[in-house]
Image 1 (tube, rainbow, N blue to C red):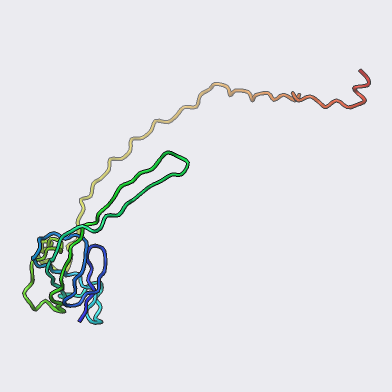
Image 2 (cartoon, rainbow, N blue to C red; image 1 turned 60 degrees about the horizontal axis):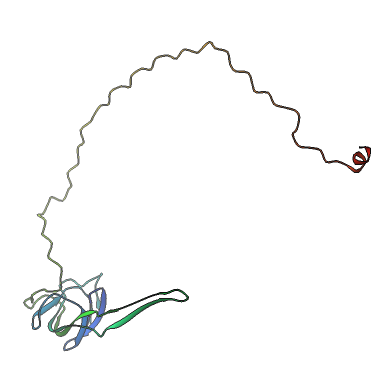
Length: 175
């Protein structure tokens, strides 16, 4: 029997007795972990998760992976940066895979806090009644009086051009 679970942003194929490495989970060595985000069990696929399915396991080890070196280098410039990183992990041994939640549940170390159940409401939603607010009528604008001043005359346009005419050969000789 195998299952596909989702943990730490990854999907893993597990079977009973497997030892897997996952992203760091809260908990100590020897504690039980319950994975409720089960995508598939033996060909039965959920949408997106199978309801009532769970995978339980035991934490074997909390640790850090081997160090990787990250080196940023810009050629022809005196710029470089070197640092390392060690990714934390949790090693888990899969104890059992349940298609339905018939066995007693283990302590959920990986799952998110349970949401508070909302009380049941009636099937029909109540209509929302908004109070009618009347807006005051806009004040009447006073009539505008046209001014009796004369309109400005249009600006005069000049007919002469400021650009010089090109001088021809005959005009050069005349001078």
